[in-house]
Length: 295
Ligand SMILES: NC(=O)c1ccc[n+]([C@@H]2O[C@H](COP(=O)([O-])OP(=O)(O)OC[C@H]3O[C@@H](n4cnc5c(N)ncnc54)[C@H](OP(=O)(O)O)[C@@H]3O)[C@@H](O)[C@H]2O)c1
Image (cartoon, rainbow, N blue to C red; front, side, top):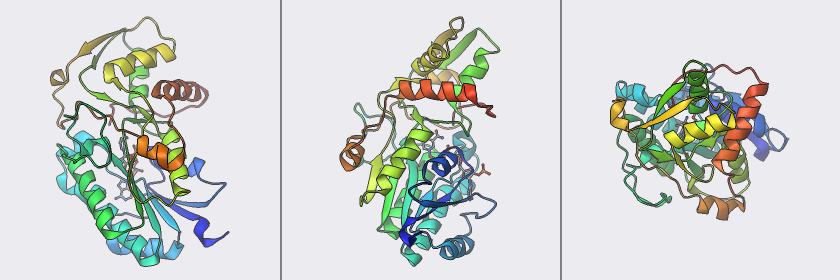
């Protein structure tokens, strides 16, 4: 296998990481590492780990993703999401590897009226968003050969997500309350993994937005989930976010414009509703372990 075919996925046990481990082999020789093999907050160990394996590209799917938990652990959030990303970038630089770094819509404040483009000024509000934004900056200033992929509202077979939360709640109660004043684009982690594979085949450097097409509020998302799962007898009531009083602020509007991704790859992300429908079918086929809460 040629050296330029070797990829290393860090965070390979996470929701996106596991889909990357499924999608990337075939075209590439793929190595995975989870936190037990490399803790990205340790710069020396990260550098040695990457230098030993000599990948042509490293994909960083590792992160501290508990948005509310980050509010009470600022140091932990920045250690992983900001400096951990920087540690990987430095390690890539020392062996001439490319890096794909995954980031988030939470780098924006959500006050826009039209979907965010890559050049729009970030203005993260919570600790998670601030730590992810600093991660983007550390990667960009450390390593020229980088792609920063911003995405949003992930769901997939291998992690806690909103689809599972709604389906589990619907099995217990006939009435749900879901917020209607935050809009975004649900994105299937498997579709994102495939998009990352496409991006790896290009020479693009810089930030790129990748989400499933279309948008919805969490309330509309819940209705679509129940519809796709053919659960007609659960009533969903639309509420406002202030009713939930969660520790971390959420951007009220976090749509990401994907036209740059379409231009770079010639591909278009499918509508989020189609992706949710497929996920629910796949989920029905597999026994998945699920948790609660969205991000
Ligand atoms: N989930 C979403 O809705 C969403 C939305 C937008 C962007 N994103 C971004 O997408 C990427 C993937 O998210 P995801 O949902 O797949 O995350 P995830 O399921 O939480 O997976 C993250 C993985 O990183 C690992 N990790 C944590 N700290 C680490 C460390 N110090 N060293 C090495 N590995 C470490 C975690 O291990 P442990 O489980 O043992 O901690 C976990 O396996 C992240 O960059 C995230 O910020 C996610």
